[in-house]
Image (cartoon, rainbow, N blue to C red; front, side, top):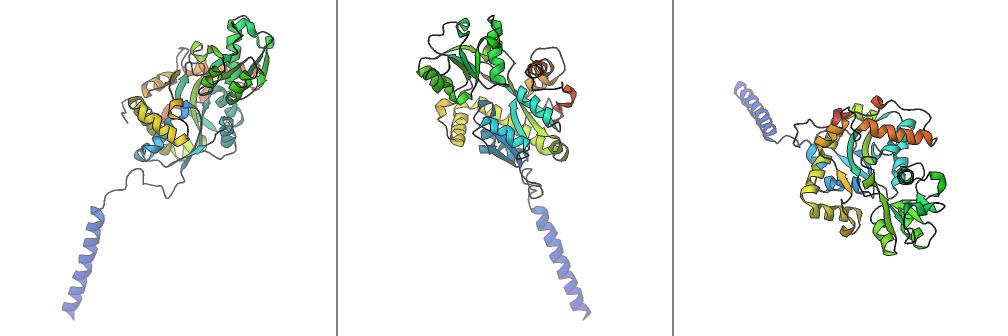
Length: 338
């Protein structure tokens, strides 16, 4: 009896030890697998704008998983619909230009900008009909631009530099995707747009008369997340940003493959994809621009210019506290090579 009991005890211990050893031999879950069951995906907006295209690369190449975050990209063909998605709580994060970010934060103060990702340096273009020879010829004419947004800001900059004011023209509130057709049928005489609509407008004889190349740093892209996400999921946000820079570096190193990935993901021709006129920032550049200084390309002067525009336009009742808008603590360390 005693012998049988001892044998059963030894057998039980052997099974237990083998189970522990087997468990110990199993590989640790990868960073991308940890916690996925406990947390829903980080939902992030994107759309048809080249400043957002690295997101498609990060998803296709598995960079989000490599960095340890589950991300669901929420595509919206209507760029302005992305804003509605964010304000309605349908997504956790949003990429957009500064004047929109400021307006969102005025209504949704419980959010922060964590990334200054790139800037248009010629990609935003004002196209004009063939008979418009100079910017002065636009006096009394119709110019298309999204009012209260960067399109109107670009038009205002163009007019001001050439001795005109916004009241000297008729501003037509039209989306960038419609400009080529409206130019072709002479409904408007000029309009703000970007590729591939610049090329489409040129086919009917329109030409570029002004672009964001002449307004460096004025139009840049930013990423904001809800404060609750930053508080409850800081590691996920940091992983998201690491994956972003990984995708940017990949695209710069492999432009053709990157273009093909983007074209497939967004169902657009690869020939329509180009970074001409747009600068995607490196991590080092982003950290420099977040640093407080008087450089016109740093955040404070840039944001103040947008705030001035929105206050004058009547869209902003009070000037926000800049210290409450930006948070660079989620950026990878300066020495990170991830």
